[in-house]
Amino acid sequence: MDRSFLEYASYVIRDRAIPNLADGLKPVQRRILWAMHRMDDGKLHKVANIVGQTMPYHPHGDASIGDAIVVLTNKRVVIEGQGNFGNIYTGDPAAAARYIEARLTELARTELFNDELTEFIPTYDGRNKEPITLPCKLPLLLMLGTEGIAVGLSSRILPHNFTELLGAQVAILEGKTSKLVPDFPTGGLMDATEYADGAGSIRVRARVKVKDDDTVVISEIPPGTTTDSLIGSIEDAARKGKLKVRAINDFTSEKVEIAVEVPKGVEPRQLVDALYAFTQCEQSITSRIMVIRDSRPVEMTVTEVLQANTAQLIDLLRRELELKRDQIELELHHRTLVQLFIENKVYKRLETAKTAESVVREVYEGFKPLRNQMRRDLTDPDVEMLLRVQIRRISLFDIQQHRQEMEKISAELTRTLKSLKNVKGHAISRLKGLIEKYGPQFPRLTKSGRFDEVEAKDVAFKTFKVTYDRESGYIGFKAGGDEFTIMCSKFEKLLLVFKDGRYKVIELPEKQFVGQDLIYCEPPDRERIYTVAYGNKEATWIKRFTFGGTILEKEYQLCPDPKSKIFFFEPDTPEKVYIKYKAAPHQKVSQQTAKPGDLVVKNAKARGNQVSIKDVASINSKPPRNWDASEPVTQLKFV
Image 1: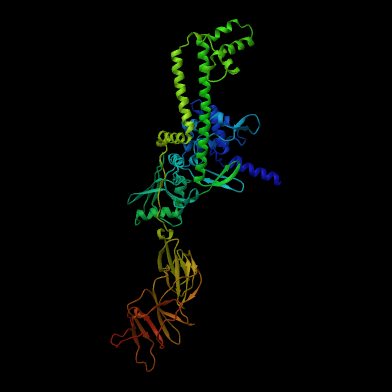
Image 2: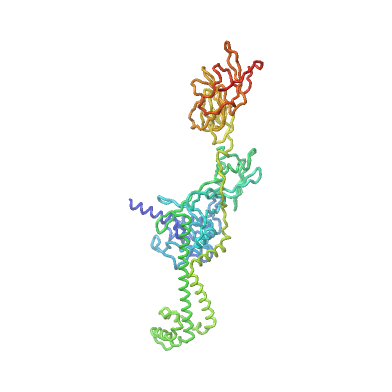
């Protein structure tokens, strides 16, 4: 069991889910491209036919092959398609494989294949051979991007821009540095400040613009979303009361266009911020570059991948140049032999030969005097080539034309040898040529910049009407009362203060029982100054204070003394309070005023300053109805 599971895990990691560093492809993608290369005649082929040609290499069924062809085609780099390959914006699926056609792009034909440099292994059934990796000269791993989940590890590589990748390779070859950030086919906006060379994450946003006071328009969407999922997230946020919209209209076809109508009383800019805060208009994407390198899974950075791809490019170009040099030298050798064979009438010696052995011997003998004009010694394959020269070619041989052709081939050999001496310079020239030729086809679609932080609680719409029903003792946006009517957002909390001096902070309630002694309810502000007067049978005190920090649902006390009750509670500091005492025998002063502004601000648990030991009837910030204006009023002095 241990051995079987280990073999299975190794197979899934290496041969299914994780791309190879050498060519940037998963096995199914490599097999598709190889099959298309074998089929390639410059014309479009039915995708169903491509699937069928790939089946001998891929043992996992036609569905996975067809899906992979659609994904590769929509990336627009190595496969071009004709027909309905789905819509990356709306998420609509592609048409059936028998209705759509595809072929390799010119870029793929020239940069992905070289049969003479490709190493092969037997296919799963041993009937064919498939490439281990393609001799790819492009940084295809970062160009395409990919996502794969294997046993015990996963890979998520974000796509990058073609022109920027090749420019970064030029910089590597020139000994310079460059910084790369992803680029997505759906466009949008991106904040890559936390994208640490392929590790970490990026934040992506839809492109949302204010059209007018009544409409905001979404013209580009973040990667990983579709117009349907985006609209669904907006509707869900509206149902939950996080934002308000009047209507949503989807006009997407070849380009994204979602018109969101702004309700009355809402600023369009506020709606844009709410869309970023509560919907799929803004998302975070994590990157982890896990690849197969030398048959083992390895985690790498963008720079390391690009350096490895560039080193591979140099190696492939050197091998191609060496191969080209050998081919040119062979062609020059053969052309020289043909010229000598005809000009010196060596073919005349064959007229007297009676056997095959004597024919070969006569050719060798005829070329012995000409050795100093040859590029190398004559071999049996050379003789076979000469014996295939037709009489028609001999009779029509044009020495002048032949020499001109030889000069062209020699010039090509000189250029090849020059490139071999400076492969790095040849690579730079080649990369710049690719940028010039194909760069306009791959403009940057995702705009990179820094986002302003959007705090959800700051942009949430106040859509919940919180009330208090004193008779039943319930508070919440479904309590049905008429006291403390407060408009709140989903993210706000409530500060509750009770007549006996208790207070606590709670989450926004739907309907919660709090009793009949509630005297204050508002969203908490830990720095706001409040004024409270409370007392018991011994005395009455007054204080200015701030609530400071609190633990959710935990009860605290404003009154340090037991059995106290609150006479007066108001946010901020009133200019003056009016204190009315209860009537008592021999009592000379029945009312006073005080200026709370004279008090020092304390914490919520402090006792405060004593008002009096008399029984207080009421304390108000305005003169009560029983206030005697004719009576001389003394102002209370705080110690």
